[in-house]
Length: 119
Image 1 (cartoon, rainbow, N blue to C red):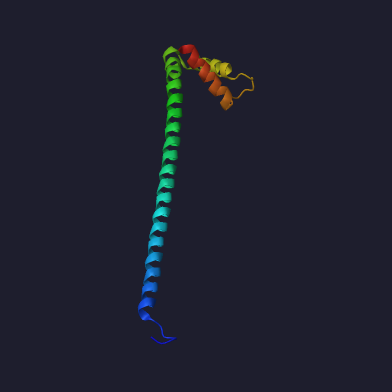
Image 2 (cartoon, rainbow, N blue to C red):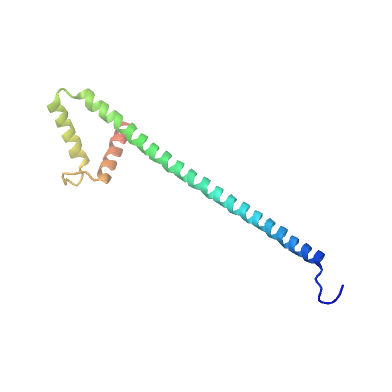
């Protein structure tokens, strides 16, 4: 081989080596990215399921808290006037700051007190 001539065998080997190495690195990179994406997706789904479960539990707690109260109200009233009177008394009992309206905090604490009294 003379000076300045290109050895095609060596050039083909180097080029094929670089292509195979880059292809392997590309495959590893894609695999790592897919793994991270799948893990993040599963984590988001788990968080959403937990939020839905918490909301359902909260709703069930409120429902289970309100059922005895509503059952008692519907069982004990004689007529519409009596029911209105009982509801007015309940509202006045829950309205601890006497503002004429119930805040979420007043409602929740009042319901908790009612539940603890019935238990």
